[in-house]
Length: 515
Image (cartoon, rainbow, N blue to C red; front, side, top):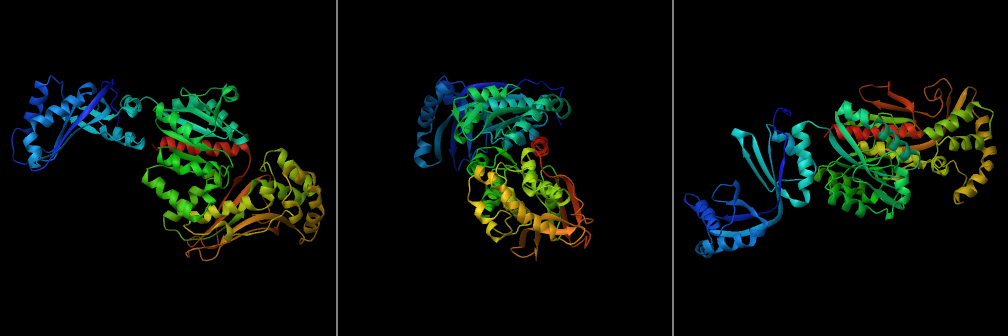
C-alpha cells in the first residue's frame, strides 16, 4: 500500500555512468573495495556508491558521465597486476544512465510497475532503516521511470497512454466515450486515460499531452503517414508509460504489427477479428510473444460485441469444464436482417439496405452475407478451447449467389435485388410457425485436436430461443458436460457502434485497472 505521509519528491540525476569492476577469487581478500575508492578519490573523481555485490563478484560505483573514461583508466592502472593474473576480469563503464532517489515503504509495487513498462534497474540500492531507495536506469527511460515512481508513492492518478487505430464509426464513438468520461474515471478509478495517437490507414496524428474534443481538426492537419514505426519512435522519445494500442479497424495489414507492439511494451486491445483467425501457427506464436514480453491482449468484442462471451468461455475452459458445443446467432447484422425478414412483408434487399443504413453491417454487406464474419467468430471461440482448426476447416453457406460475389461493392449493392426471389422462396418453403436464423455451430468431440464448425442458414420454431430473438440481438448457447442438456445462454445486443465501442472501452479499463 502507498503511504501518503512519506515524502513524495523523486530526485532525478542525469548524465551519469556506472563503473563496473568484476572479477573472481576475491573471497577472503580484504581491501579491494577500499583500493577502488582510493584510486578514484586520488583521481579527483566524485564517487557515489550505489551497489556493492558480494566482493567475489564485483562492485558498481556511479560517477559523472564526464569522468567515466578517466575512472576506467585509473582503475585499470591500479589493478594492473590483478588483471594480468586473471583475478580481475573486467573494468568498464556503462554510459547514458540516470539515478532516481526517493523514499518509500513499498518498493515492491514500484518494481512491478517499472517491470510492466519494460524498465529494469541497472543498479538498485536500498537503505532499509531510512526507506531510502536509489535506482539507476537508462537515460532513455528516466523520465518515464520518474513518472511511474511519483504516481506510485503519491497515490496520484495512474496515466495510461492510448493509441487508437481507426476512427470510423466504432473508433469515433470510442474516442467520444473516452473523452466524455475521462474526468469521472479519474475521480472514481484514479486513472488518467490520455489519447496520444489517432490513426487511420493513411494518416497518423500525435499529441503527447493528449487529444481533446478538437481531435478531428488535428487529424486533418497532420502530415505524418500512418506507420507503426513512427508511433513506436514517438512513444520511446517521449518516454510514455503504460501504452495501449487499440485496433478498431478491419485491416489485414495492421494486425501484422501486433507482435512488434508487444515486443516494444504495448498492451493491445482489438475489435479486429483478423489476427485471431490467421493460421494457428501465427496465433500460437503471438501468444508466446505476449507471454515472453509480459504483455496483455484483450479482444472481448471479437465475438458478441459487448457481451461477456469470450471471458465466460475462457473461465469455463481454464476451470477444467468440458465444453461440448457452442452454437447460436453470432452476427448482430444477420440477426437484424433475418429477424426482420422472417416476420415483415418486405423484400430481402430492403431489409439488408436498412441494416446498412443503421450501421449494423460491414461497409460491404457481403462480408456479413458471405458467412465469413460468423465463421471468424466461430473460429475464435474454437481456438479459445485450444482447438487447432483453420479457417479452411469451416463449412460455410455463402448467402451471396456466385454471380454477385466478384463484383465491386457498388455494383453488388446496385444488383442486390436479384437475391429477393430466392429468399422469398426460402421463406415460403418453411414449416408453419418457423423463422429463419443464420447460425454458427461448433460441435463434435471438442477434446480432440479439431472440432466441427458449421455456418449456415436454418429454419427454427418461432417459439424457440433462437426463434424469439429481436432486433440485432445475438444469442450464444454454451453446452458443457456439467450442465448437460441445459446450456448456459448469453443473449443481448450483438451489433452497433455504441455497443462495440463500449465493449472496447471495457477492455481498456480492464487493462488499466489490472496494472
